[in-house]
Every structure is written in structure tokens, then in C-alpha cells.
Length: 103
Length: 190
Image (cartoon, rainbow over all chains, first blue to last red):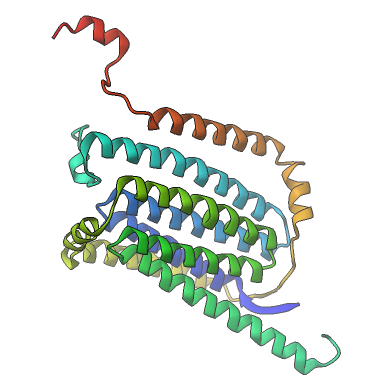
């Protein structure tokens, strides 16, 4: 079936989602919201991979999407455990209060 | 479906409309995710964003990726976030604090810089002339053959990564009263 959705439109959507995730990481001070925004960025890159795989009718795009999914799951589990530990030690999720490394 | 050209055109148009509507829903819900004050509201909008993204995957002819998006992202990762929000008991005071933090003075600079970045991406993507591509469905059989054929080492690495994630989360998540190293403890008579 011939579709009139061009690959540029899908790539633009992926770019827009990625930029939105970037904005979310930068403007938020609560660490949970930053993790959510990182998820948005990972999703956007997954969309780009799937669109490219669909464009050339190759399975590699979806394979990369599965790898991104596995990485996101591992990252979220470790990240949320770290957030729990941070909350127990500092009683806060504000990233400005967590400057232990004086960076 | 191919018997009449009019039906064919209608189908073609419908898919187009479906794609643009879903893309609009995705973008709006993502904007809502990064602007909400209450964490649970942001999570609900993120679930909507993931569901509409999975519909886009389906429209792109990748049904396996669409299913994985719903099952793993909306089903498993979001549940993890909900558990953590429940454990930390983030409620109205968090929303109030977020409201204080999210002032235009804070977000306007990064937003402008990101808009510049997006305009650059827009320009780069639009430099190539638009090619409407024929939609080919990549089904799960082809993906599985590729996954367990040339990408086998990647699958094993992903499995190791997931196991490391589980062990790491279990180790980090446990409660410890003192966070001193066991050799340092002997040397510190304080």
C-alpha cells in the first residue's frame, strides 16, 4: 500500500519529541520528572529507528528498538532505586540539594 | 480493497489522517508531561503519549514494536514509576513545590535554546526532498529471525544488562544505616 506519510514527517515528529524531552530534563528540578523526560527522549529515538526500519523494509530498526527498550528498563530500575535511596538520605528530591560532590 | 480506485484513495487518505491525528495527540500529551505539577498527572499523560506512539508504530507497519511499546513501556516501566511515587508519598505538597519551581524565568531560556535546536533539525530534515514511501509491513517473524541470527550477541548483552539492572537495583534499594566502607570503619575510632 502506498502511503503519503513521508519519512521527513516521521523524523520531524521524532525530533520534536526529542527536543521536548530535552526541555523537560533542563527545566525541571524534581528528579522524578527528569527521569520521565529521559524516557521521552528514548522513545523519540526508538521512533526514529522504527521509522527508518519501516522505510527500507528491514527488521533492524525494530531490533534496535527492542535494545532501546531493554536499556530503558534497566536504566529505570536502577534510577528509581537510586531515587528511593536519595529520598531516604536527604528527605528531598530537589537536585539543587543533592550537590554532595560540590560540582 | 483494490477493486475500486476510490476505496483505495479513501484508505490512503484515512491512514494519512490517522497518522497526523496521532502525531498531534503524541505531541500535546508530551507537552503536558513536561509541564504538569503533579507527578501522577504527568505519568497519566505519558501513558497517553506512549499509547499514541504505539499506534504510530502500528501505522508504520511495525506491529511487533507497537505491542512491545504497550506491554513494556506502558505496562511495566510506568508501573515502576507509580510504585515509586506511591512509596515516596508524593502528593499535594510536591505539586505546590513544582508550581513554585516552574516559573517562566526558569523555563524560558532553555525553551528558546531548544526551539533553536528544533529549527535546525527541521531545516536539516527538510533539506532532502520529500519521498512518500511505500509502506511495507515488517512482521515479528522477520524481526525474530534477525534478532536471533545476526544480532544474537546483542541479545545476550541485553540480557546481561537486564540482569545487572536487577541486581544493581536490589543492591542500591536496600536500607543501610551506616554508609561507611568496611575497611574505613576500623580506622575511624571517632
